Length: 102
Image (tube, rainbow, N blue to C red):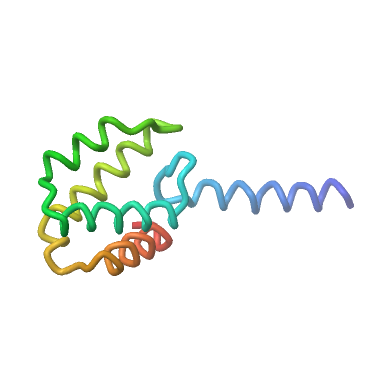
């Protein structure tokens, strides 16, 4: 009986791990949202895309995928999507997209 329960737990856990949309490293979707708001504030303050990317180069990361994710978020913030976002909405959109697996 215990073997059956442990097998079921393992299968459920494996399915959850495999269904992750993309790796986040040590970051959470909330972290992604907070960064999107931070990057949107940079844009509102007049920072250029190039300056934002330089900021990302100077950061330290716990996992290489985190840098890739933040570059992608900054790309959206400093791209056409960012034209219609506020500081708050940028964070909300990116957090919700992360939670939805996009």
